[in-house]
Image (cartoon, rainbow, N blue to C red; front, side, top):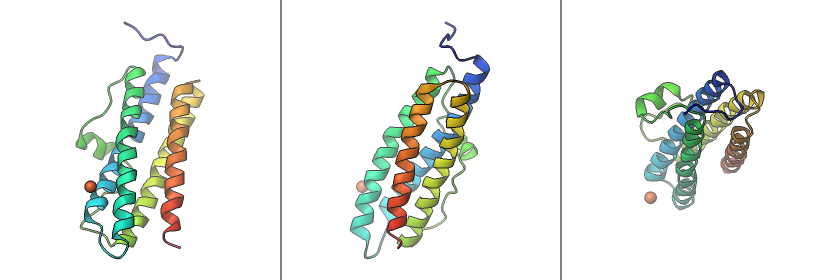
Length: 155
Ligand SMILES: [Fe+2]
């Protein structure tokens, strides 16, 4: 059946494309956070190991909501590492960074997702797509708050 929710097909496609980038960034940040949970060392081990666990669990749930919004708009959600590698703006890591560098890289990655979500919000707002605007607002709050908390560890 055709989708008739009051958003033109071309606009639904543009929103789905923007959301695919948010999904790829979020999934890549999920993996980076899980990686750092496994590999962090040093005097802050316990704090960071547990904090990273809270963060990757939130991200694992978040990707589902983003992918399902893409589906509700009538488009396939990307779901392979190859697609995520092409779509994501977040840099992957070589080797195991020192704990402080992990925090810096996570701040940068949360800020990257925030910028990508902000672009998706603008595309959705233009199309009068309130559910996507709402979802992007929620994601922006999480990523900007998490970036602040991580940044505070470095002061
Ligand atoms: Fe664990």
